[in-house]
Length: 125
Image 1 (cartoon, helix red, strand yellow):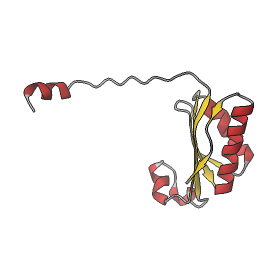
Image 2: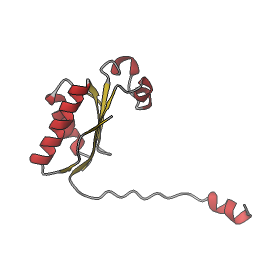
Image 3: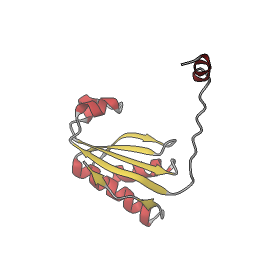
Image 4: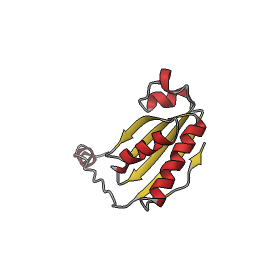
């Protein structure tokens, strides 16, 4: 490494984030029986949250639609909201595998049929 390389690595890094307008759900996934470390890494309370045994993740644009989808999800089954972010379009649901699956299916159906979103398939691990 020469002196020029050292100077260039000390420059400020500029990151440009671009959001493409659209109406879509790009990820709809259920994690069945996650390890308790997953709850801690997601910032959830493991002593309370992992007793239900499933985590659901939904990512969407526009990001503000996460608010509407969270409402649909909790009304569809006994699912609880672990996290909702209107700035990134991320929704994390907690519940049993069947509750989380039912809620995400309701979100996908509503967004596709009513809001005319492009949606992905529900996946599970």
